[in-house]
Image 1: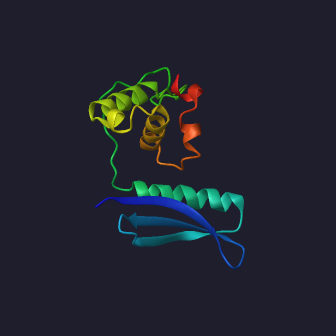
Image 2: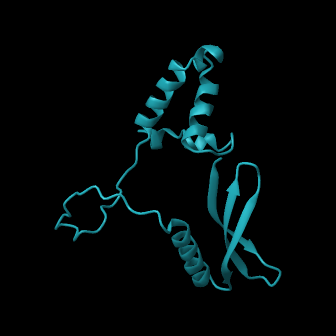
Length: 137
C-alpha cells in the first residue's frame, strides 16, 4: 500500500492560515497533523518549514563519501540547470519495450501524455508544462 504525505495550508474561520501535514493512503483514508496557525506571512513561512522538517524526520541523508570542495566551504553545490531529456528517453524506451506503443497504435500524443504523467503526476492539461521543450533540453 502506498502512502503519500504533503503539507497543505487551509484558511481557518478566524482568517488565519492553518498548516497541516496530510498523510494519505491509497484507499482514501487520511491522517491530518496540525502544525499551527499563521497570522502573518513570516509565521506561515516558518510553519511550512517546520512541517517539511517533520515530514523529513528519520529520512537520513545518503552519504556519497565525496570530498567537500574548499571552493564552496562544504556547502551543497548550487543547481544551475535541470534536464529531463534523458529521463524522457528512458521512459519512452520502456514504453515501447513493454508494447504500449503497439497497443496504442503508435499514438504519439497518448505516449507523451503517459510519459509526462509518470515524470510528474499532474492533470492532463498541466502535462503540457511538464513536456515543455526548454525543460527537456
